Length: 244
Image (cartoon, rainbow, N blue to C red; front, side):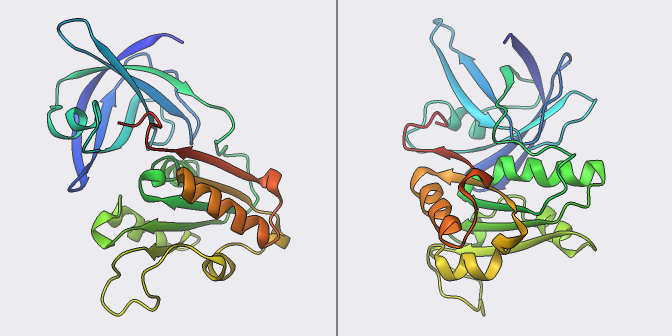
């Protein structure tokens, strides 16, 4: 795959540590929801660093690509992308990459999305793609975050979940909850999976994305609830998982 130049046309802070970057890529070949790109930064001395980031935007013909990057304190690339990058700057992109962890518009079966933290990014691409093509495939999203202030795409998700024939949205807060929240903070467990995800008899396709331990736990819980392992698609990242 060739490297392409993308120009930053918009920046939006999702949280105090996460930023959405909108790039205009003149010869972008389009993509499928769930795919990712490699981003390459090159210093003046010739040193370069490459990191992988999921695509948050739906496929479109205008050549715009959105990436949402969470800053890591010990990161080499994410601090620059979330604090120094400016509108008009250029980035090198390679992609789109990936063919397994994707949602295609022809899929009509129930879709279960489970996100841990910044693992929401490729799943948001799927939600936006569903809306852009007018799909009526039933979607559910279970989104695990530390606290309310850590939610990516908060207003957009609220708007989507309020629509008729929309995406059913459930939050699972691990450290702090909003006032009056019915469930105490904690990790996703068997009861949360049983109460909020599609019944396994409907044979949903499940997409799980987040840190490695989160993904492994969520996938195991889905199987324990009767879901077929071959219908569970996962994407994970660890301490050195390429997103710094």
